Amino acid sequence: MQRKHVLAAGVAVVATAVVSVGTGFGFADTTPAGSSACQGSVTFSAEGGAPAATSDRFPVGTRLRVTNLDNNKAATVTVTGPSGSCVLLNAAAMELVRDPGKNVIRRNLVERLDGGAAQPGATRPGGQTRPGSAQPGLSAQPGGAPAASVCAGAITFSAEGGAPAATSGQFPVGTRLRVTNLDNNKAVTVTVTGPSGSCVLLNATAMDAIREPGKNLVRRNTVELLR
Image (cartoon, rainbow, N blue to C red):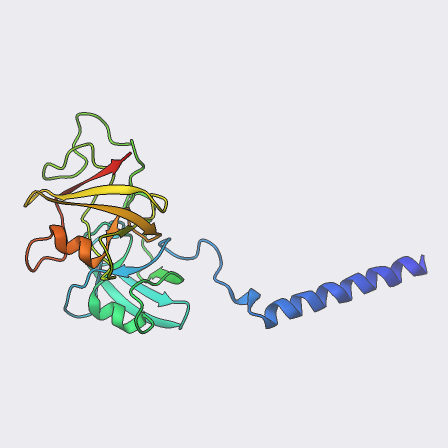
């Protein structure tokens, strides 16, 4: 019996040591799962003005705090309108939180400061629509976007350079998409190169191929999945 007690005490000491080592390496300092109001990377729309954000999940006037977990910088923003992301910062808000040279915040925490809930019927973070979920005969967006579109909401861009490409929280790397601006009928074919918090988030080159001069959002659009 005494030997069993000694062994139990030894296990307890080892367990305590493991917890201490884990904390020392920062494992205990991770953000609890589900504490963020949005999932996925945070990007920006390149729109000017005072720090603000747009969202497909929270109504206009909602106050959010966005924290970059890589540098602990935070920005408090007010939602000023809709977009295709759970939270899409404008240029001024992004400047407050991003690391130099980075246009995407992959490790982030989004908190709603007014204590309210997301809009009823909102989709999962990023406002994504699953491929093939559009119902025949129904418009996927107000304003005439065809039901064939695999994404809903306005399309924005991440300001990243390179050949025309996109990131997505809905489609895996390598997926080919055709994005059409219904206001000018310009289209661009892009390949998904990584994750983001939007159904489709264009890079700067792809956005320049379809947007109208001076506009950083493509509100009326269709996104087609190319097989």
